[in-house]
Amino acid sequence: MSADASKPEQKSGDISPIAAAMNTACQTEKDNYESLLKSNQKMAERIEKLESLLKRAVIEHERERDVIAYLKQIAFGKSSESRIVKKLNNPRADDMSRQESLFPGDDVFNEIESTVHGLGKDGITSEFDLSEQDNSDDNNNDEEQQSGTDQSIGKKRRKGKRRPGIVTMNSAELEKLGLEVIDEVINKEEEFSACPKCGTQMIAIGREVVSTTLEYTPAHYSLKKTWKIVYKCNNCSNEDKSLIVRPQSTLPLLIHSVVSASLLSHVIEQKFCYSMPLYRQELQMIDAGIPLTRKVLSDWCSKVYLNQVAPLVELLRQKLIKNHYIHADETPIEVIKVKGSPGPKQCYMWVYATTKWNPHRIVCYDFKPGRKAEYPKEFLKGFTGKLHVDGYSGYKSVVADEPDRDICSCLTHIRRNFVIALRVNTKNAETKIIERLIGLLDDAFTFEREYEEEHAGERNPEEVRKMRQEKTKPVLEKFFEICKRVLASNIVLPQGRLAKAINYALERENEAKTFLDDGNCDIDNNTAENHIRPFVISRKNSLFNFTEAGAEVSAGWFTIVQTAKANGLNPGRYLKWLLSVLPSIRPKSVLSNLEKLLPWSPEVPVECFARDIEDIRLQNSK
Image (cartoon, rainbow, N blue to C red; front, top):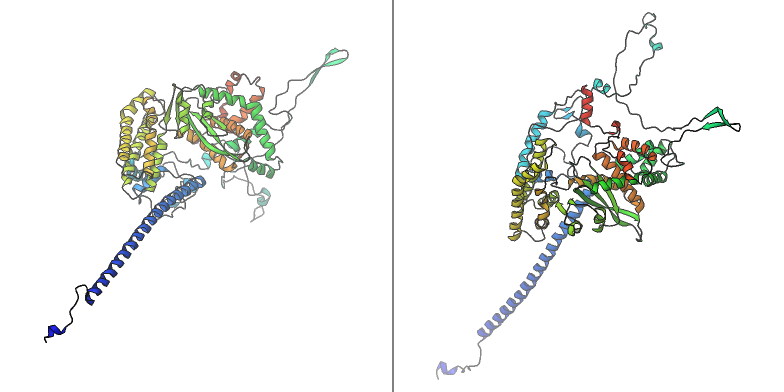
């Protein structure tokens, strides 16, 4: 029997052990592969979820950073936009060897130290021996260095010129100010009457000036008693009674009150010009020995305003409405007691002002319980012309149904959004786009500044209009063209800072071009911004108004003070004169009787006009 015949026959359906092992291995690999696929799928889902969370975290981080920046601006003020742009274009422009400030925009030295001429490169020098031109070379060099960084974004600085510096005075110049001179002798005659060597009586042969110092005497209070002399005639008698003659008494600010024009003008100036709340003034008065409380001071401010000053404020409002070019802005203020509100409410202070080149400048403040468009509509009733505003959409309804009204949007607000975008996008592809757009806007502002400098304040509206048509209009057309191309190319994030800035500008394109066709219009709304700033500073110190009536009184006093400042008057001296004249004007309901009290009236005394540093220079040069 052969070997092959001795092996058992294998059935066709049987699988060899090797094949079975291979099948098992393949099945295991298949299971492992499917497991990996499921694991990869779960990992991809987890990665997608984490990416979504990361995007949300980035957005939240940007929001928190904006909130922090906003809070810093509230607490410490805003840093210069031009400084932000310069720093981003040339980070090494600043001297890195000096001590860095904790907050942006602050210098190393404080406000007083940074203005002293003696703090120069060579250290501290003599305070009174420096002339006005001592630091001109250093300032010119600094301006040349700054101009290199400004030109990349459209800034053009003049070289070789500097702002007027502080008048440095020696003892001889101090005596020219007309101040009271107090002589003090440091030695007594009896101490040197006898010669210390031989005992002979000595005589004075002259005196030597040891030093001259500028002294300060704190404000003092005094009582002013006003009398009137009563006369009688012994010859003229009726039934044995002599004829008695009493002169007419002067009218007081408040009947049966000790308040005077000088005292109240000081209180008003401190609160509404220098932002000193009444409770601080109360502490000062108590320290000076005067027991006046803030309640008394508040009552004086309210009653005198309502009884004497309110008609003059209404006259200013009526004259403001007659102007064809007005700036408007608003800012919030918290009021504790508001009618119809269970608790404190955020109200608004609105400000309306004439243009800065108006010969009779007017600034009117108007308190309202909200920000609705009906409030500026009510105030501007009867107004026709151009209204300069910021980006608040409520102003559009003010001109919606008025064919004789137009809106001039503020280019500064448009530029500010791009500066914020540049601050966020410091190292990406959007930076060059933002710098280009900011540069175009800066060119528009440069054209305005160059015209003002060349014509030295003599403004011709028709020449301004031609200049804008020839220079500014092509620049703005290019600006909006780039904005549209960038937005259409989808190269920016829809919710990014740059996209928001572009959308803000395009939404106001027509209003932003209004000033091109009228030389009397302004390029921005900085006039209203500058006039509302004193109120904001006062709000930071006072925190809130207690009642709506008090807020309305504050608006009236701000109107008087800021209008006086805008027309070159010293608020304190103007208020003193105004409050001394107002009681004698009757009736006040006839507003024409108050014309002579307006800040530009020729009746205003010369001593009411404010002085500046140039006036002191002129006085010292005589």
